[in-house]
Image (tube, rainbow, N blue to C red):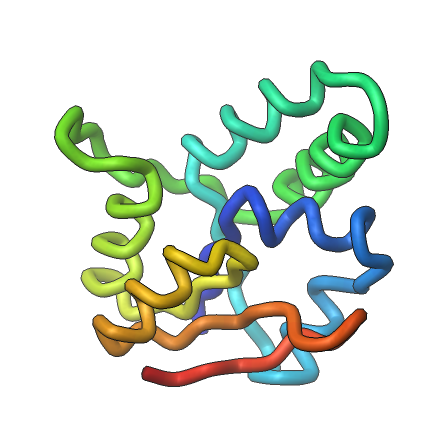
Length: 127
């Protein structure tokens, strides 16, 4: 199963002390990690910041390096979140995110979502 990680999800490990890939594997078994090029670009921008947020983004970039990089496709009329939702629907994958609005959209569209529940636990939700 392919799991697409968004920016927020890749920053969770340092922000919350979660072993993201182990938690995902515990929920769904073996998986193929995917990171959109657009997410990597966003992490790169945030990583230039000082402090905890910048450090979390730098850690997220290290995790992204362990993923298959994909493009969400260019579309000036859609946000990155909208393109993530489209990609997930068309490529039949699970999305790992902590973004509430994206989570709601994905679940409404029937896309399974891995999200943080409690202080350090990732859970799988189905719409």
